[in-house]
Image (cartoon, rainbow over the protein chains, first blue to last red):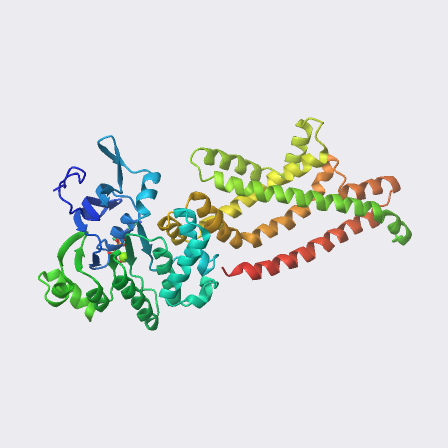
Amino acid sequence: MPQSDPRTSTGTHEPLIRFDQVVKRFGSLTVLDRLDFTVDAGERVTLIGPSGSGKTTILRLLMTLEQVTSGVIWVGGEPLSHRYQGDRLVRANEKHQRRVRKQIGMVFQQFNLFPNMTVRQNITEGPIHSLGISREEADQRARELLEMVDLSDKIDAHPAHLSGGQQQRVAIARALAMRPKILLLDEVTSALDPELVTGVLDVLRTVAETTDITMLLVTHEMQFARDVSHRVLMFDHGRIVEEGPPEQIFGDPKEERTKAFLHAVLD
Amino acid sequence: MTWDWEFTGRIIPDLLNGLAVTVQATVLGYTLALVLGLAVALVRRIPVIGTAVFAVMEFIRCTPLLVQLVFVFSLAPNTLSAFTIGVAVLGVHYAAYTAEVYRSGIEAVPAGQWEACRALSLPLHRTWGAVILPQAIRRVIPPLGNYLIAMFKDTPLLFAITVGELMYQASQIGGVYFRYLEAMTLVGLFFLLVSVPSAILIRQLERRYAAV
Ligand SMILES: Nc1ncnc2c1ncn2[C@@H]1O[C@H](COP(=O)(O)OP(=O)(O)OP(=O)(O)O)[C@@H](O)[C@H]1O
Ligand SMILES: [Mg+2]
């Protein structure tokens, strides 16, 4: 059921993110099948589900690293995958997507820091060259964020000289420096040695507690998901099998597939 | 034929002049190859135009440098000096190779770097100028250095279009005195004296930049 154009809808409750009948295919493989879901501003939503169920694809579509096959993605009442041409929705061009996605930040599993830049440059590059703020202000922001992720002493280090956990904390600071409304986190601790996971999760807990950034996270850290998220979506084959508050999904799942999945990960 | 030291001493100044021309042609030609090759590598990514440029570069790689030199020299207006033509042809010829080197360097930059640029909405000139190219070029410094030595060793071909480089000087001397032993030996020696230290330097660069 395609939802109505939010410009004509009444009421103040417009979700921050809305997937409207989103289909994503890679060749003959249908990864997302007419997916509908919404996320409210300030909400923290965890996506769980077996490998290949489409979790990463959802985040990549939001970051415009992939394009929808059909359907529309809305961000803040504006189409992200499309744009208006008169009254008609047409495919978004790069210029439109660049503008809308500035509200969205992403932290990657493999950090993807720029190895040719220092920590400071990694964090200030986006604010200076994409948002157009002054170097002084960007620098100030970088120092504050590094303090938050507890890496103030590494400001002039190169990523290669940092541990994986430290690199990921820099990557979180880099994403936050853009002051995004939405933060996408795709298995951000999966590439880390076990002893480095806690440090990164602690930083994310701080972000969750001290900001109202909307978060979409994919994680296998179930305790963390339980602690920080307002809502959990259980995916299978590109569809939502079950959703609910974390206490219910983790404590009292209704669907067999959710039970089976949780059983498998918790063992 | 015995080695004549006194004769050797007399021809050295001319040969050194030749060496200077050789080095100049190499430096200028190489600079052209570096800049043009990068431009070609970037243009090749554009649909249609890129394919056309690729075809031209393939053609250049498939024909001998000597033929290209003589061909362009015979067609070029005589307002252009042989040296200018030589440098231009050397530069364009080697650009066909450096373009491939740059391309492999660009392709070796992990997809995650492009994605991070996109996630930060970096403008295109920063994505290329601050992220992709610095990483790509760092990776290809050693192969680019090898082409510098290869080009240096190809400069004697400029002799064919009367550029007064080292080989040209040596053969002039040989033609005048009917003695080739000293001049040609010195030519070989000069090439060695430049090539070997350059090769060592490039190996060092290679070691330094090997790990990104
Ligand atoms: N670029 C691509 N080309 C082809 N197939 C792809 C591509 N990206 C993803 N897929 C496929 O789409 C499906 C969903 O992938 P996705 O990465 O979204 O799953 P996931 O839920 O994140 O899984 P995991 O838990 O393993 O990370 C998988 O079958 C995957 O192989
Ligand atoms: Mg995934």
